[in-house]
Amino acid sequence: MLSYRHAFHAGNHADVLKHFVQVQLHLYMNQKDAAYTYIDTHSGAGVYALDSFQATKTAEFDTGIGPLWNATDVPAPLQEYLDLVKAMNPSGKMRYYPGSPYVAEEVSREQDRLRLFEMHPSEYKILSENFRKLAAHKAEQGERSRGRRVIIEHGDGFNSLKALLPPPSRRALVLIDPPYELKDDYKRVRDALDEALGRFPAGVFAVWYPVLQRMESRQFADRLKRLPAKEWLNVTLTTRTPTPDGTGLHSSGMFILNPPYTLEPMLREVMPYLVRVLGADAGARFTIEKGTQVTGAAAGRLVADTPRAPVGNARRASPLSGKGSLRLPGQSMPRDEEDPRGLAPAPARSGGRDGERNEGRPARGDAPGRSGQDRPARAGTPGRASPRPAGEERARGGGPGPRGRSDGSAPRDAAAGDKFRSGPRTGSARPASPGAPRGPRTRQGGGRG
Image (tube, rainbow, N blue to C red; front, top):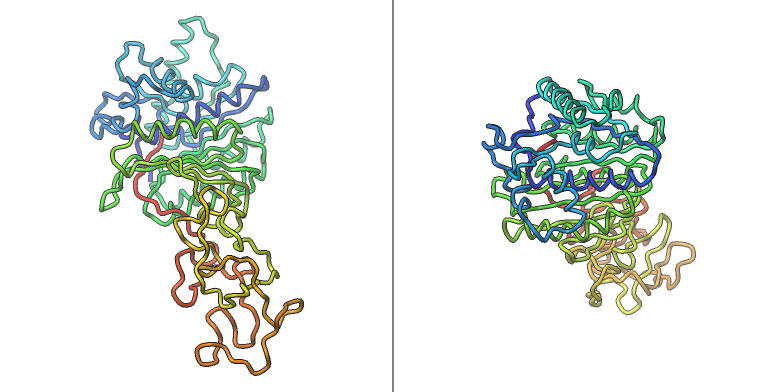
């Protein structure tokens, strides 16, 4: 299905987040003299007229570039992006907005190569014509043409990654930005990244995605965290409270694999400003996460400048999720001497990133109130102290306790193979579906450019 046209969404808050991050990635790559290859798997038209029928019909630019156009207190990293947009509007009137190919052309250097892909036939023709006009304009200004340094292809960008990686220069910046009209797009993005990292693990890969109500979107970021990259960085921007029916784009994210070390500090500076300027109501917010591969061992999460514990699969494996939540297969579960059943309320935690839990939820594998420390072990396992006297019956009529088995052995913990849902426990824990980590709740929308 090839019905998506980004002209209806050009310049919205999702474009602001995406293109601001893209500019910073290019500037970081430019710090080394060695050339790099920029690959855009879903390029779109390259340039969009904000006074066109498509753009004015939805006027989504009023949620993004519009409020920023005349702003005077813009943070320096965001100003670099705004300067690029204003440079293509020399009259001072907001008429044109750049797509990701134009951003790459303007910020990259003469020695860098651009590989642009677009499947929509109309968008491909517009993209080719826009770059032809751009080359002619630069020639009139006496600038050297890039020639074959910019190659535009009418084809599937996902499949093209295989032939382009690793690049000759061994440096690459890849932007993946499908329309997400089809549920299969989420899987294709992950599969393409998995193969691309196998071919070229040192590349910088940036993925834009909408935050939707559908399950594929809600699980998307957590699935990307398991890819075999050295590090990842995830940032989302929400501009308003979602509507009751969940329609409209209110939130989007950028997920970067192998991110520059300079990017997170810039996001901490810029994201509060974007929330303040682009936020439409009290539901406006942002999130920043970073971590490492497979287990999602997040180094921290920032939600509207408030530190929070990692979410989804990252909570179980992260030392930030509280004492007792990090256990390896085969480790025993010690119990509290004063409360062997572990039903006493947990002591209050101090604020801050270390030891803070996600909105009061217990960490996976721990019942509410368990500290995970100083508990005498049960009998039945070698090395455990304080065996239960022979013939002693458990509470509740002598049957197995709420956390034990009838044979007196300790229950399997989450790290050893049993997966538990992350909500508060009422009775026995319900096993979750294998391979489906629970991520943050998301809402609806979409876009590409």
